[in-house]
Length: 339
Ligand code: ASP
Image 1 (tube, rainbow, N blue to C red):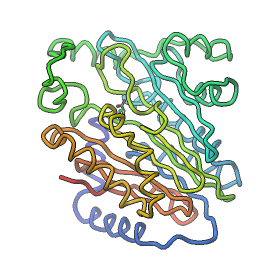
Image 2: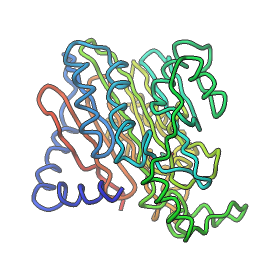
Image 3: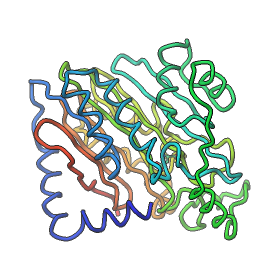
Image 4: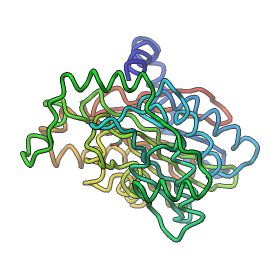
């Protein structure tokens, strides 16, 4: 998290931010091209490396679904990334529980939630999609399925994550309560404040015009054991409709679930909004519902329509997304924000 913020400070602020902002507008304003050009986009700065891996698949004429599955495995494996995959920070009880989902343009999808001991939940999500009649497996059942599928059981809590968890325990004041105040994430220092989120959501369009998406996270650090965020919930953290486009989200999953966020973004595109307009409207839906809480929490949406036009919007500044296509590699753009 600290790394990401430092990175954003150095790479997005100042003169370079102006240049990047110009590229955002150009990107959003670009008319939909008739010829399909492959493209992959993903959330946050770690999306740059993830996109590179996905692009290697797309560039060879590969399937968008394979591209997103390959791409998001990069942050899942990154030991410095404490918000996705094997080095993700644990829950309140010190257990690393991972959430992931994957979806193609035809409505095929699979997901796992609160999965422990498996380093690449996205691979298990795809197996759920392709080898079961189900969409979502959770907890012990998801682990049992993963082991039956031959995945290796591992200890995911790294020494660094364990240390951070012990530090958090010293100051933790997060107690489950029916008190509505516990929903004011940022103010009370609860999970989901400004500095306690990050997920990779990735959307790809391949050269044959097929869309796909993947989303994977360790969720909020220090969450209650059993808490599931938006990322593995189809329609919340991820949604793909081959006729329209795809969307994914990052930030406080509870707010995204309440508003069926990614589904909403795709439906707004169906009604004629550009990806950028759709992301903006979905963000404003969250802000309007809980204006006070929204001042302190982050949610970001990222979308791509079937022509490859891209948009993003967030509640707070700082949300960035990575774009990769034949013209530009390793490009990180700042999303516009409400505040
Ligand atoms: N959306 C994820 C969740 O709520 C985490 C994040 O993106 O920060 O689990």
